[in-house]
Length: 192
Image (tube, rainbow, N blue to C red):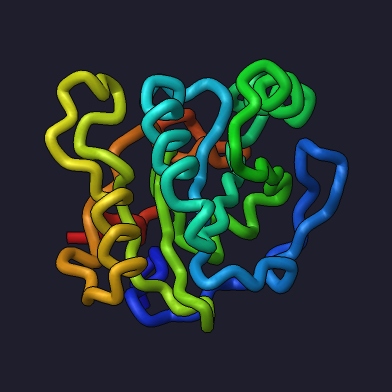
């Protein structure tokens, strides 16, 4: 079995605290499509591409697509990835997505998250229809040639088949608790 969810697999359940003070589970979302993405506070790929992600959310949220960011990074590796910094970051930037905290890293393992950011798009039945990068140049969006997340959401909201269901996420690796900051699980590998 692959480390990362395969196309067609069902979204693993979760129950996580959010920066808005509430607790959310997968079952709380009944939107036609759900985008779950692994993100954090410190990663330069995340920070540089957050505004592109915001534009995508603003474009597709009115069409029934819900966006949920999850921070699974260990604050023991990067203290700025702790929950208080998550709350502060959301207050400062007013991002239009929920921001959940995976303190045990069990959700990152269940989804097979590789990097920040790493996007997963699920259909109404919560089966995976896309996994991978948001854009092809997240560290420098000015050089972006491809916005895969926008393309996928354009295709699904138009009733088209997804032309490219898998890409490799581009970004910093998940910061696993008790491991060196560049460590990745042995079975974690590129998606394509």
